[in-house]
Amino acid sequence: MVPPTGDGGSPAPIDRPILEFLQTRLEATRQVSRATVTDASGHLELHVVFTPSYYPAAVDEAQLTVSWYTNDDFKLHYREVHSEHTWECRWDRHPNPHNTRDHFHPPPTDPTPGEDASWPDDHRDVVALVLDEIEDRIVTLWSE
Image (cartoon, rainbow, N blue to C red; front, top):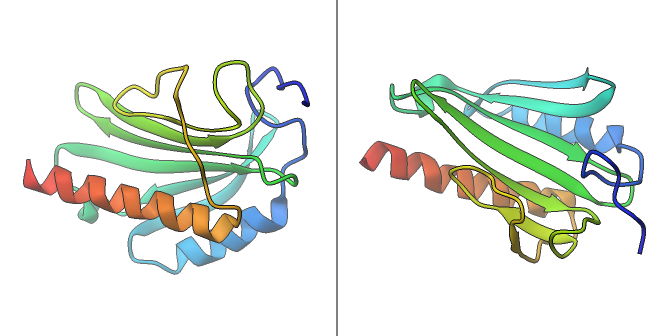
């Protein structure tokens, strides 16, 4: 087993072509207001901001941050900002001391350790799964 990195990420480099592919696809949807590949703090990632009109007024901002590695490890971190709290969760695949390689950090606080899980192999399928779960969350928000 490859040891985990200090940031809880993968020991492999970031897969920029996959981030750019996802950026192009997500920018083409009405649900996304902005998708940008950034080098935040020396860490390449895709930062996605969802269109505010998809959310009730109680949500100030909703975003997804994607890190995808050349060995198909990943971190997808969803976060909603509300006036008095945040609601977040994370889908992960990477070596770590707290869970299996595939795992989920559940809402509302994204705790560690998370829950062991199993994710699809293909990046498109993983992102589709995550977007479906975000859509379910949006439906729940509107029904509250």
